[in-house]
Length: 284
Image (cartoon, rainbow, N blue to C red; front, side, top):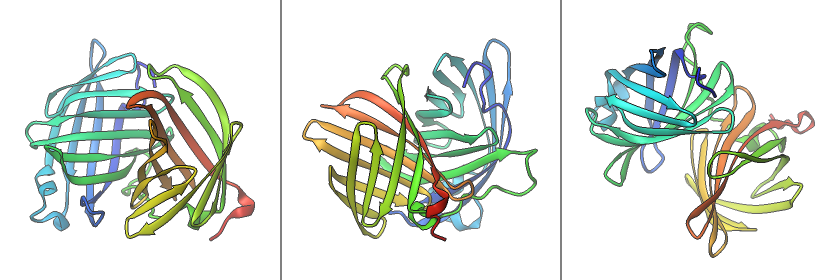
């Protein structure tokens, strides 16, 4: 993602919205346009249609047009208003994480966008009032010219697609520099999941109750799953933790995500990864 920015253009976006307890509320349809301006600025237009299922929900007020400018400074994106104020930061080749506020909408936000292919991006995040989340979102976007219909992000857990996955992970320093790239494999043998890298194996047990699971094994923590998205935190030592987000894109049969590693609350590194199906393990 360079100064030209992969996000420029016209996009159709389907945002799957969930309540803070993981219940599906509906889909926000969005037409998004990013126009290049002078002096390294981009203007963003968003036309949003929450639909009738959001009646009496705060996301109903997300309807209509929203406009803001952003500037690009290396890895940093500054959201300059009027409708969005805040910042974003890129990691690796295609992951953008942002945070800020929508003054007119009256919400704080945290967001992400990442590319599966040049013509398919996964999006999401949360809207907050103070510290309380009012909507949790995972979505998908495609160029408007790519097809006439709205994009779909299937709710297909990875373990229902295949038992074995392969790919690679890229390790990034806190300032975004590439530290290493290495192979990564994953095997589902529920309730266990085992991942293998050149550093060795890590096996975790996931015990689900509704939308959440307690994690045990080579780490202790919890995970939350809504639709195609999983988010959780694992402690591998009292002072060492790993926060992770991953999205299983059933349309491309990929698992895409990132991990943030902390030591005593200080960020040590970020890992981005993408996994593909081992064809001999397909479990449809």
